[in-house]
Amino acid sequence: MSDTNILKTKVLEHGNSSFEMDPGPVKRATLKDSSSPFHATQYSELHNSSKFCANCHNIFHPDNNFPIERTYDEWKYSIYAQNDIQCMDCHMVPVNVAIRVADTLTRPHKLKNTGLSGVAAIGGPVRELVHDHAFVGGNAAMASVLEGKESVSYQESVKRLQSVASLELKVNTRGGGLHDVVVKVNNDRAGHNLPTSLTEVRQVWLEVVITNDKERELLRSGTLDKDSNDLPKDTTIFNVTAVDKDGKHTEFPWEIVRFTTVNTIPPRGYKKTKYSFNVFPDSGHVKVVATLHYRSFSQHLADFLLGKGEVKVPNVTMVTLEKQYPVKDQKIVDEHKATDEH
Image (cartoon, rainbow, N blue to C red; front, side):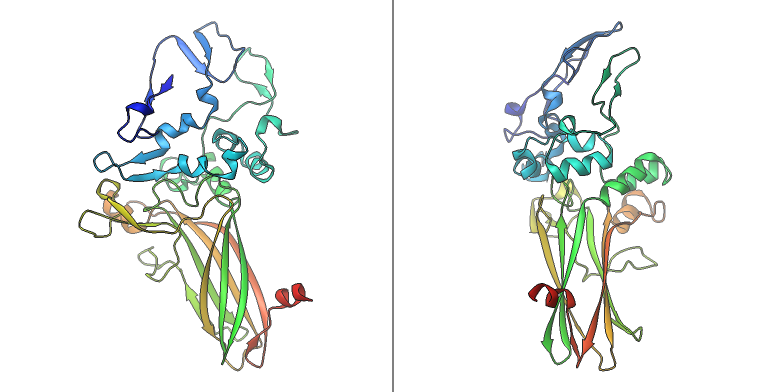
């Protein structure tokens, strides 16, 4: 890849493979002092910029120009881009370094003690930063199918997913034994929306289970069906809803003409969801367990495209938060809130 050609795309933007290729003896990358006995070398500023990734990670419909995938744009208007954090600063380093990049908004080559020094090629000089070329993201499903769950790619995908988000809980009493629990989902470390890419296909969802000390279930939402491996209809899912030209729901990118709902979480942003439940008079305390899950696509979509039962889509638990709340006179006491107010 030698350049971009965004002025030749239908929407005058990056996307749909808006790059120029120049195959031949010259190999391009980010090293200004590279040399090779096998081929010519050339420094490329493009390879050090998120514009390199933008060529394929913005997708618009080839006929109606609707923006189907906007990963690059999500990054472009984020606090990460404002601090010059590029895509490769997170996706071409190990997870532990990507966490430091996100938390400090500092590019890897400016961090200390990353453990990323070494040689980029046999016979080359020792460099302070050698990038990982696996480009691991969150698509654990494909890694599990192609390489298995024991593979490095799958394990790295899971680690990334489990380092991205956090949860917060708050319980409000409404009277008469009725209560609300508010679950806040924070996108702490993704430099793009959560989820990103084909967001009409991705599934990031909340599972919330509330029980009392008598093991009585007060609420359950978002638990996968054991037989179908699919989600209940009332599940809170962070994605988008797409429709075709007839206004019918679709998960096929080639049919999309517009989104009817958008519920993804922007970088350093959050979304809140409220659940209501009753407390039984004999409850001494209630336990709230909130879990954020991730799947690259649904089981019914995998069955449709690949054949029923051919692939069981793996479910990755991103983060779980569990809290217990005492009950007094059918009112839940939010001890954390009371402590904060005190």
